[in-house]
Every structure is written in structure tokens, then in C-alpha cells.
Length: 168
Image (tube, rainbow, N blue to C red; front, side, top):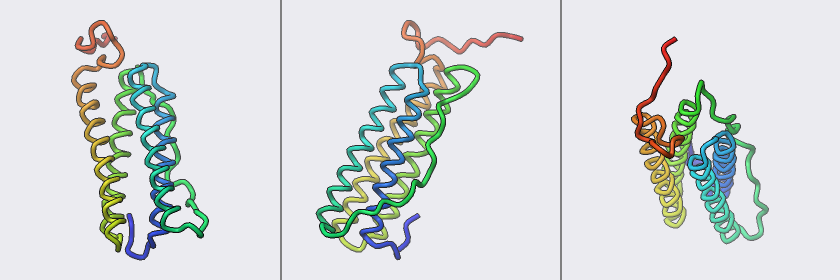
């Protein structure tokens, strides 16, 4: 949550930290996925976080060329790899976690846009909120697919087959 007491300098530092943390989260999720499609998806999100971090660093350098950047400590610890009794459940949990992380990032940037006092800052934070809203929407759609078709990401021959559980 952003407060109106946060300066533009501090808001950019916090935003940079959020993108660093997001990249770590997505790399961690990718490392726990055994499916190449899911791994690539999380690595793409990690690369996009790195690009947004560079965008924010560039903006910081443009606004505060003489002030050294101070990035606050990490906001969230990166999660462990996706777990569950089988790969489907682990991936399901990873997608849910990632979608929730993107929702939180979107909310953070919307709060930052509302707290920003200059139009450029407001526009930048709204742009970042829209990027994270798109990520959230894509992850929610992938999550819905894996709920309906649990083998969508781990069975290239017949991803539409229903989940089969043994009766024990």
C-alpha cells in the first residue's frame, strides 16, 4: 500500500524492489516446473520483470541523476518450487500463486498512481498497473484451463484427457 507521504524517489525505489522480487518469484516457480511450457511461461514473466526494473531504473536516473538509488529490502521471500502430490497440483498451485502476485502488483501500481503528485509519475504507474493486469489475466486463463484440463501442460499427446485418479 502506497501512502501520500511516500516521495517520488521512494516510490521508484519500492517499485524497483517489487520488480526484482517478482523476477525472483518467477525464476523460482520456473525452477520447480518439470514441463517446458510452464517453465518458459514463468521465465518469460521473469524477463518482463527485469525489463520493467530497467525501465524504472532509467526513470530514476532521469529524475534523480545526482541521488544514489536506494532499493529497500525485499518485500516478500521467493516461494519454493511448486509442490503437490503430482505435477498437475504443483503447477496449479504455481499458476495460482503467480496470478495472485500479479494482482498484488497491479494493486500496488494503482495505489502508486493515485499517490503520485505529477502527471508523468501517474502515467508511468498506470502503465505498470496495466502490464500487471494483463499478466494476471493471462495467468488466470491458464489457471482456468488447468482446472478444467489437468493435463494441459504435461501431456503433449492428449492434453484434453480427464484427470485419472487411482481408487485406493
